[in-house]
Length: 302
Image 1 (cartoon, rainbow, N blue to C red):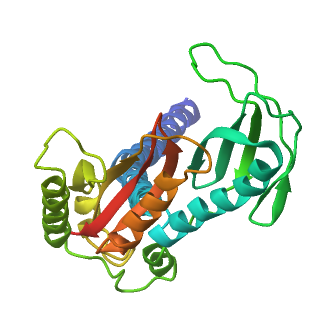
Image 2: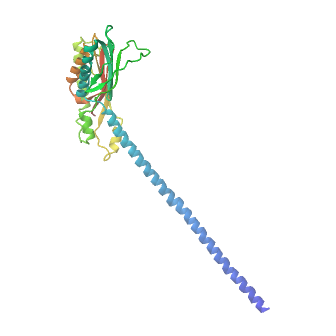
Image 3: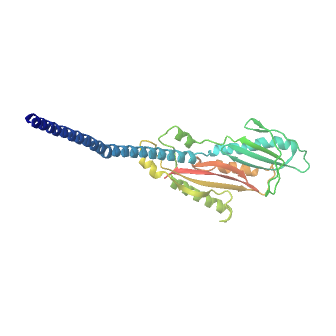
């Protein structure tokens, strides 16, 4: 009887200790779980968010650097006046031998910083052949162009994708070399010069305000899309405070005869005698009905 009583006590006593152990283990597990959850929510998530924010900042900075470089690359993509003058001379040089063989009536051309396309029209009594055109010492074969709808004049010979070599400038070379100073002129000085030059041209034509022939026409005033970015990227990009705009000039004559070439000669002269030549870059030269238009970018220091 007593043994049974004592056995009963030992049994319940052991069970109580076991319960305590089980409860303790449960509490430990819960604490561990709670601690893990706390670490996840209060340590890992904030750390991940901070890392993501840092990555976004790096990507944004890289994007801003790319935007600044792209701005300078596009703004300085044109050729200086010496290159444009040389291209006009090369066009004349290439046409004269063909004219001596076939008697040409007129010509048209379009040149950008990569290529030139040249069209020639024969006199009505000329014998049609397809001579090669020598352009920058390289021969190019002629093709007979297909008449295009909406074009009044049909040309007999077409020379396409001639390497223009109309690229490069002193300012672009300085930028690519990482120079501290690009040699930019003041925008105020440039605009003052343009106004003075145009006034003299107008005076020579009797003060006509409508005729812009031979005038420097500013198509867009100098400005910068990356001025604010340059201020925030100190140490990552060189700050030049360069502004860019666009300009154009046209020359007109009463004749489009191929041997006249007065438009080409006149334009060469006009480009050569300009002041602040380094500020004006040429992106395109193209013939008009009775003239030539040259256009490009304008760069200066704000």
